[in-house]
Length: 293
Length: 272
Image 1 (cartoon, each protein chain N blue to C red):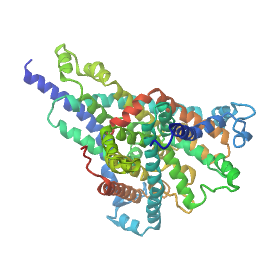
Image 2: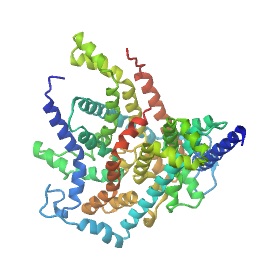
Image 3: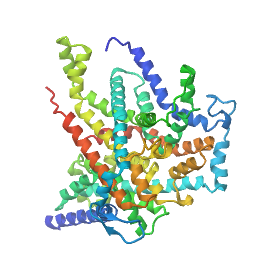
Image 4: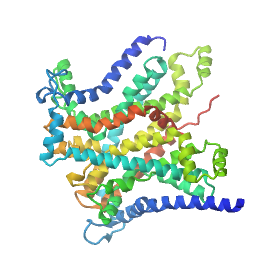
C-alpha cells in the first residue's frame, strides 16, 4: 500500500468518526438550537398549531413586571454571592499557602461540599436554617432571638447565597491557590529587600498577579448565578414575594406550568445574553495583562 | 504574615473545616436518630435504622418507589458515564491525531458548542423528546447526554502530548485504530478518562431540572427527582428525608473520595 492510500484511509476514518458525532449533535444540539429561535418568535401551547408572532414575546417581556423582578433578584443575589464567595475563597487559598500540615484534610473538607447533591443539600439546609433548626437554636442561645432565614426577602436571598457559597469555596479556592503558587517567590523576596510590608506586598504583587485566576473565578460565579434552579425551587418556591424567583424558575414555570414555551425560550435567550454581557463587562473592567518582570 | 502565629491559623482552618462538613454530619447522624431527637440532640439516646426502612419499604406502599428510583439513577448514570468516556476517547482521537481535511473545523465547532449554557436548550429539547414520544422513559434522560463536547475536548487536549512515534509504530505492526485508542492512547492519558468519568457521573447523578421536566411517572424517576417530590409532599417526614438524602449523596461522595486526585487535576486541566 502506498503512502497516499494510507493517508486516504486515515482521512476516511477521521471523517466517519466525525460524521457519527455530527449526526448525534445535529439531533440533540442543532435541532434544539434551531427550535429555540423559532419558539422565541412564536405563540404556542404545545398542542394547538404554532403561530409566528415575531418579536411580540420580547415586547411582552419588557412589559412583564415579573421579568424585571427576576432581573433585580439576579443582581441582588450577585451582590451577596460574588463578594462573599470571592473573599472567602481568597482567604482559603491564602491560608493554604501558609500551612504545611493537614493540607489534604482541609482541601477535602472544603471540596466535599462541592460534590454534594443539589437536591440533598437543599433538603438539609432547609432543615438546618429552619426556625426550630440547629442554626437558630445556636443563635437563640447566644442572643435570645431567632432569624427567619427563608421568610424575610433579603434574608432568603442571603441564605441561598450562603448555601451556594458553602458549595463553591473549595472549588474556587483551589483555582486561586494554583494562581498563588504560580507567582514567583523571587518577587516577594525582592520586595522585602525594599522594605515592603505584608499589606503592600498583597496589593502590589499578589492581587495584580492573581488577576487571571480572579477573573476565572468571577466568570464561573457569574455564569452560575444565571443557572440557579434547584435551591430556590426546593426551598423557597421562589418566595417570599417572588424575591428568590430566578431566571431558570421563570423559564420552568412559564414553559411547563403556564404552557408558554415561546415566552420561556425568549427568557432563556435573554438570560444567556445577560450572562454573556456580565462576563464580558467583568473582563473589560477587571482583566489586566499580567507580566512577570 | 509573621504577626499571626501559625497555630491560630491551624485552629481557624480546623474550625472552618468542621463547619463545612457539619451539614454532612448532621444529615448522616440525623438519618439514624429517632424522629423526636433529630432536632433536639447531637448524640441521640439510641440509633435506629427505621428511617431507612421507611424510605426503602414503607414509601413503596405510598407509591414512592425509592428502591426503583435508586436503580433508575444507577442505570442512567452508568450508561451515560460509560458512553461519554468511550465516545469522547474515540472522537477526541479523531480530531487530535487523525489527519483529514476539515479537522480544525470540527475541533473549533466543539469549542463553539461549549460556549452555550445548557439551560438554553431545555425547552426546545423537551419539544424534541415529546415529538419522539420519549417522555416518561429513561431514554429521555439518557439520550441527550450520551456524548459531550467537553469530554471530547478534554481527551483531544491530553492526546496531543503523546509522541506520534507511538502511534506510527503501532500502525507498522498492523494495529487497528480502535486498538491504538484502547491500548495506547487511553492508558497513557489515564487520568483524563478518570476526570471525564468523575465529572460526568457527578453531573448526571445530580441532574435535577431536566428529569423533573421529562419524567412525571413515579416509577421512572431518578432518585433526585423522587426525593424532591417526596420533600414537597411529605416535608414533615424529616427522618426518611434525611435517609433519602444520605442515599442520594453517598455515591457522589464515595466516587469523589476514590478519585479525588483526578478531581484536583481536572480543576487545573480545565483552566488551560
